[in-house]
Image (tube, rainbow, N blue to C red):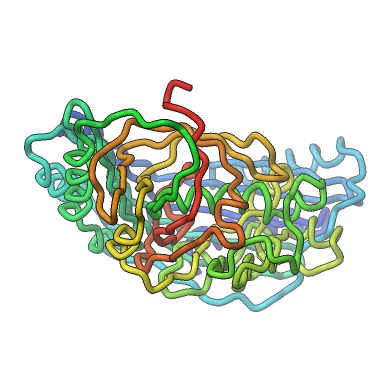
Length: 443
């Protein structure tokens, strides 16, 4: 039993028979090392406790948070939650608590990552910077170690622990920049030299960038670009609340995507990062969202599942009542194509390394506008021939990976950073027949 589980149990004990109640507690340490101009300028670390208590009294529901764990503070949190619930209107959509259900054990921690020191992170940063001694490097290396405990008044209990480490940064030449990213459960897996080498190579190739005319181009997208596409589709589309609200593009059973695309939420895989239960204590299981191009699933918490007449898929989070349930262990099934082979088949197109500042114009069609960043390259006659200046795109993410538009899927699946952060998507490179660029970075 971990510390977080003890606190969650104590909260439920204090509530007693006064209400239905569930408690989720997170304890642990997060630490960050930042660097800029090729020097470390910040080291921060925090031992933090996050408590969320939700109570329901005769259908009146309230959720409060706290971060103090002494018994007096826990008593006060319970009393405040009960008082808040008494002031709420009856919630006709309250779906009740998760009944006792077996949950897979989940110690997904790496001792070295849990104990990582500033010197450990600095060594990864040193490797990243050393890969480009003539350039200016900037970015971060962070580590986290979390224990999660859950308990509710029906007797459901779950506990788990996970660690994560990331290196993310750029190298700059003065007129160009290239980026590199790596995420793993273990800091020992981070290869600062390789990640920095990737950033250095892209920065060097990005020099001498020239303008090109907007239009539809064949593209090879990096895992970072693909991760952004997937996170946007998941948040705005494969989201039970968005479906119920009529805001989603999802048409279950329809071939909305290219047959080469399979997208799963895979919380039980060997390299999954997060605990295999959600904020309501529901066990997470594998869920197909896209299977061979066919839209196959939607994420649910207990509230959206009850409205849809199905079972929760275990995707509740602290804000899911407002934002809807979300998947956090996403993976696109790898293909068999080497990155170099993708490039070699492009007669004239673009290689895009990062999407930036993406904004949804229409959630139903998932038309999104955004920019390329940190390296956009012209491909001619099967070779990268030079860099082009950053471009604005305006493109439906659905049709972008829609039927007939995915030419090849890379074999380079890895955790990729996205506009929603790191550690949520494992993605490969994709070669797409067409992507709509609508102007330069200023347009």
